[in-house]
Image (cartoon, rainbow, N blue to C red; front, side, top):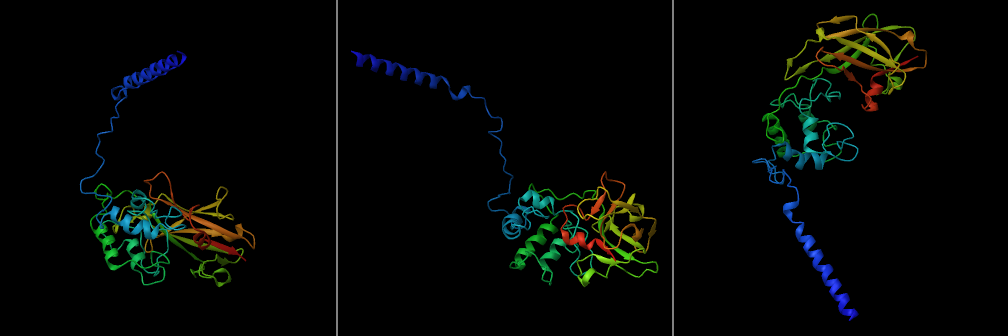
Length: 309
């Protein structure tokens, strides 16, 4: 009798549970308004993307061959971790590296419809040992053609939109340091090592020429003569410029498109290494262009430095 009672109790509990679950029908669950949205883009199959598209370049070249640990994996730009980061750090983005041949100045990594002036192409085809991908097998002619085709097609984004030229900040090209009779000083590097700070004598006054441009596609947006900010900050700490000494440009050489900054070396004692950063603004941005920056490689921080002897 006791057994029958237990069976009846279990059966009753089971029936109640079934009825409870049945009452929680799918109709009682709030609908997701995004369930029926089609996120696919016509003609844009990310599994097999067009090799001449940014998606194809990312899948076949940028990610597998360039986003290596310590390289373009977010360590420094261009950032090839995703399609979006690749696009954002390539198109119309300024070059922060000296030219390989020291002759042609490249202002931007990629300029839509302009293969000749796109620094990315130079990095891929250069005959020097500094080709990209670094320390790897060179890209094939076909792969380079895919990159060129994307550029010549207007650098379309993931959704097929042609790149729109932004109002970029001026690009800092570099500097030249000269003495009172315009003898170049920045070629005399400490211990004759090209990437070391250049050497200056204590007590001398020097002039530093700021070289910067505000161009894209070869068209000048703002003449450097009209820059509202043109100055150099100096610090004995390569990473901390909070207490830096600032000297602003006093004159402009139109034939060289260079601003001249007078700098008294007596401001620092013998044996001091002084790091400097250049700042310019075209009057159309809330922040100044700066180089080197905090995140810039140490290689450039020592190039933008001098040693007082």
